[in-house]
Image 1 (spheres, one colour):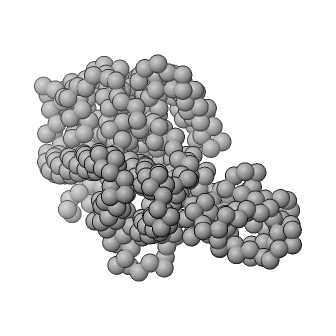
Image 2: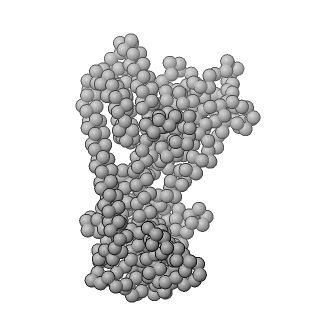
Length: 502
């Protein structure tokens, strides 16, 4: 990777497209050269690196924040590539708040408007207005959540009104942009409201469950005993949660660390919420604990008496079958959540129950999701799913739901192992191309519509059934099969004591 040092070779330095100057020159960085010193092959005076964009093999690899921002701004005869727009808008928030970036972009756009107005070139004015509206359209389309900020809306309305004045043909387009944005933000508000209601319901039902563990009158098999249908309903939930995650949330989670110079008040005010990403991670945890809870709490519908171990084994086998169907669909996130639930200590310790389970299918699934070699088996399966999706003719074949926590870990690893800036102060844009590629793949998966029929009863149960966590789960596990060794007996004794003290 290019790091601005220990490099000998020819790279391209060019002024941003919107610079008042039109200068491009080939330069060399000598081995060991520090602080981004730049000298031209022709022996001209040293260039101001802060005004330059650095290219290597035709690819933009670094530049100052100012130059990169200027490169985003369109002119009558220039419009930035969509890949650059996405990569820069995604990663620039590590250095500048979105509303400050939009303010600077609007400032540069007004300057371009003044230049074309002074030249009295109506055709150029029209092209400029069209390009600015196009840029705003792409920003609001991909990073709509930025515009929940009133400061963003203020700049948006100001620049679009100016564009409508210089190019009346853009008024209809601007109106459509605003309508689409309002619709997206309204959908997000409704989604977050539903999540709040679900969480409140879960809290109430869990409180009832803790005071009366037998309050559950039916187990998962009474709700749905078809693993195919269950896997499809899990996929509905996964795809809905995925669809509401803003691409910037992946980067926003790094902001609090990377902009330590922001004061606490400003950080609280400006930091983009990552609530949708967090809600999706919480869903994975809920599903894992739900699997464990259903196994440990399974009861006959008409009886509160503990059931025989063979019925509990049936529930385990049901979840194994559901996991296999998730794999077939391409729903790797639910697959891993189910495997995690089956491997939780309160479930794994039920040896008498497991002795009645045919574990062959489970062993195959565990092998597919084996964490060794950085999840190499899973990554191979994911690539196969991507290949299938690329040639798909139906939404059913296009479904790809990655193991989300691993994807977030990969992005975090990229951020941690590669600095954001070079020694000369340039933004390491090569890193952000890589980040953008990963997030772009996720955005593609978000666009797929779930093709399966919705079963409201099953969906409601998956989303609202009370779930036990940690200590409570261990207690009901010991109720299923008593402690067998000294360690388990001590754990059981401690948990019972804590329960009595509450």
